[in-house]
Image 1 (spheres, rainbow, N blue to C red):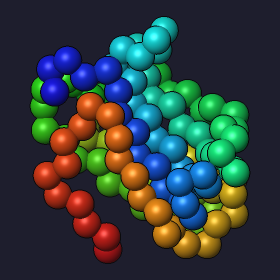
Image 2: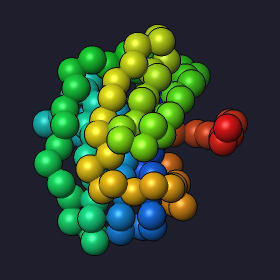
Image 3: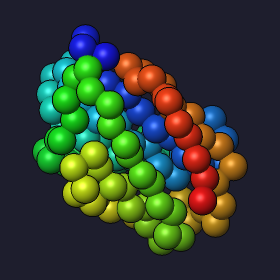
Image 4: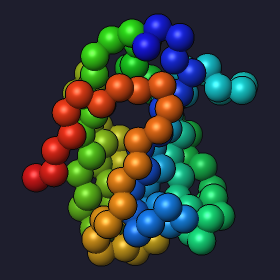
Length: 111
């Protein structure tokens, strides 16, 4: 979307417990062109991990791949760059996935 501000992919146990919150921000509040990672336990956000690396461009088609490696998540960004985020919740399986924000899903797959 050409007027996108952000989108988020949340993965975890349920809507209140995310082992991974992946949030690229084009322009959200004071955050511009950065990626925010976090966890949510019982609805409470943890400490943010911020990445200034930002390969996203408004209005383009992108592919984001997330691999769950038990101790951490590996996120492959559209340009092939990888970012890691630790599994702070020590979850062993993903029962919940949510995608919200300025993002249109064309394909979604589990392997």
